[in-house]
Length: 104
Image 1 (cartoon, one colour):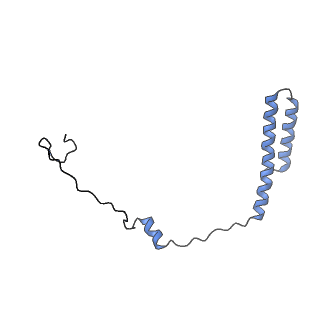
Image 2 (cartoon, helix red, strand yellow):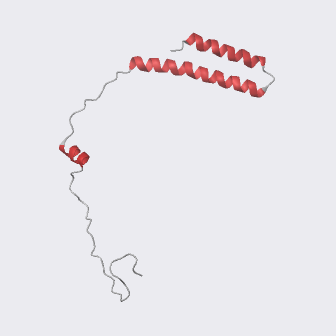
């Protein structure tokens, strides 16, 4: 884990580099962006430490699946939809050979 002192030292280095390039706007913005990221790192790390010490983690108990869950996983549910097939109409054409898809 990175110590706060290391992050603060890096912030100082970036600030000094920005001061050295104060005549170049793009360079100053680049260093300011790096400083912002380092500050966010410091702030987020503190928040995470506070949250970690105040949060009680509990793992939910997993029970065995009930009968309905087992049937759903295994695919043994009865078919509740009305999937009825309609009887196919045969072509009644003199030039057709029967039920082929190539009858035209």
